[in-house]
Image (cartoon, rainbow, N blue to C red; front, side, top):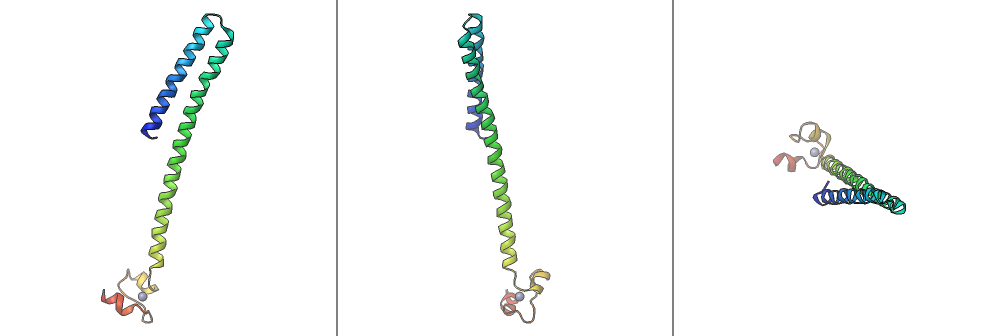
Length: 108
Ligand SMILES: [Zn+2]
C-alpha cells in the first residue's frame, strides 16, 4: 500500500469516527433522523477503506504477474537464441558439425 493510500485510509478512519460521534450525539439529543443519517454516512468511509485495501491487493497481484511475465520472456529469449542442440547441452562450448555458427561461436 502506498503512502498516499495509507494517508487516505487514516483520513477515512477519522471521518468514520467523527460521523459515529455525530450519530451518538444525535441519539443523546433525541434527533432520530440524524442518528440514522450519521450512522449510514459513517459506513461510507469504512467501505472506502476496504476498497483501498482491495486496490492495493490488486496492484500487488499485477506487479507479481508482470515480474513473472518478464522472467518468462527472458527464458524464452534464451531458448530462442540457442544455436544448436550440442551448443545448448554443452553450455555453449561446442556446436554440431552441421551448425552454420560453428566457426563464429567457437571463435568467440
Ligand atoms: Zn550451433
